[in-house]
Image 1 (tube, rainbow, N blue to C red):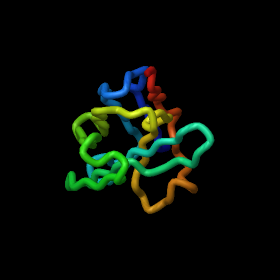
Image 2 (cartoon, one colour):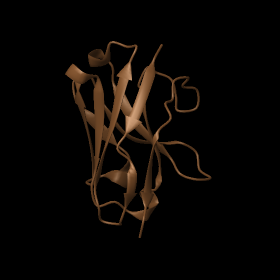
Image 3 (cartoon, rainbow, N blue to C red):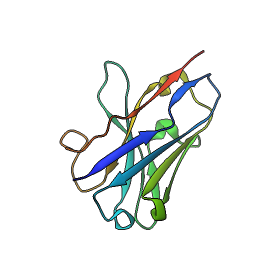
Length: 119
């Protein structure tokens, strides 16, 4: 059973920083690409950033230069360092095993972690 446990969210002013964590169990973590997604109120869940098993990364244009994804295979954890946060970054953030499924048909979403602009 795949399980994701996201943490690290909170209230933050515009321009501030947060680091999100997602610990995953039930899969051979080190050989899997992992992604971060977010869902703002009233909107569909959207892609944020991805890291491959080789640590190559890709990101959404909206977070370019501000967010950085990384991974710690020893602890089955993927991180999202978020800098220079903007009000439009307010959302619930989730991680996902990149197993070929889309964000619309992935069966193992965790509870997510809430990031809220407090400005």
